[in-house]
Amino acid sequence: MPDCILIQGGRAHAVYPGATKAALCFKVHDGDPIPPGHDAPLPRPIFPPATVNAIVEVESGSVVVGQVWNGTSFDPLPVPPTPRRRVPKSVIVARLHAAGKLEAARAALDAQPLIVRERWNAAAAIYADDETALALFAAIGADAAAIMAAGEA
Image (cartoon, rainbow, N blue to C red):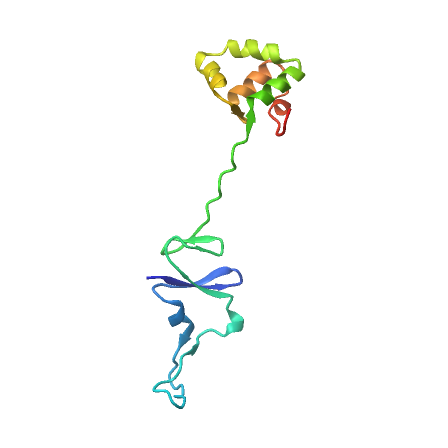
């Protein structure tokens, strides 16, 4: 069964567990007159329209005003991780060559353990924040920020 959330001022103001929007928004009040041709009083709005931004029916996992309703309370929306930027190896090689550091980089790479050399050989691109690559560039005196910068060579 859904829950209803009263939204005021851009934030969740009140929670009505197990309530439907129709039942929450309209209610027959004691003493309401019975209009001609009806058997009972007509329901009328509970909240004056000017005071309500929205009443939202939610199921667990629904997003309401930038938060996730987990069935009992709101959790902040998870912040998606920033994707790691990759730099094509062809760009890295071209920049090392332009900087006059390609031979030094090759010698430094050849001195690395087999796993480091194989990772380099297998990869089409290297993460811009790869610690092994940055350390290798620093060791040969290359400007790691320039070598791993975004954009083409």
